[in-house]
Image (cartoon, rainbow, N blue to C red; front, top):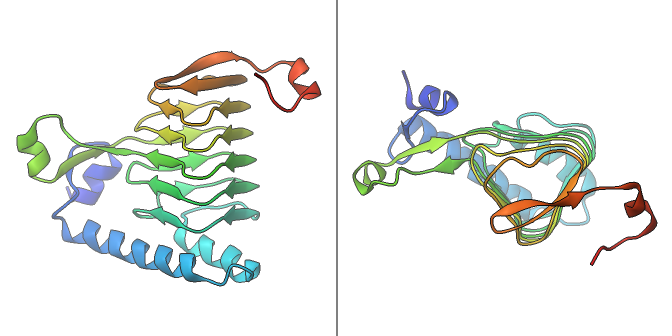
Length: 195
């Protein structure tokens, strides 16, 4: 079994020293670098080019530079996907976003992790668990989502949250670690900010 196959099967794999994975990451980094240097006013070119990086997209996808990811082909985004500046997606485990996603600046989605023991970690071994996000989700600034997390639909994740566990649908969740604060209600339709 190749290291790439181990990665895709959520097994420990050699991320640092495997030539195939190194080449895949280098290809993706070159594409991200080119994307980030495209003229900001050339929206058509940017919209077309982002689709060469991501594995699967809806028609309406917009990511502000700077954007970085590891492989690109392990990312799937639905329709009406918007991400502000500073998005990082470490997508070895696969990251799937539903429709109508809004991501504020400086957010990260991290599918990769490393063994706690230094012997295996120093060998370059890591694991990668998928991240799945439903529809109609808003991530506040600085949110970080960890390996293996599933976030439901109709969710707001508050700024600065570190999401280490699954978050159910129809709620506001905040904190470090992120936890459900309250359900989203009809009353939320009458205000723009809840204190």
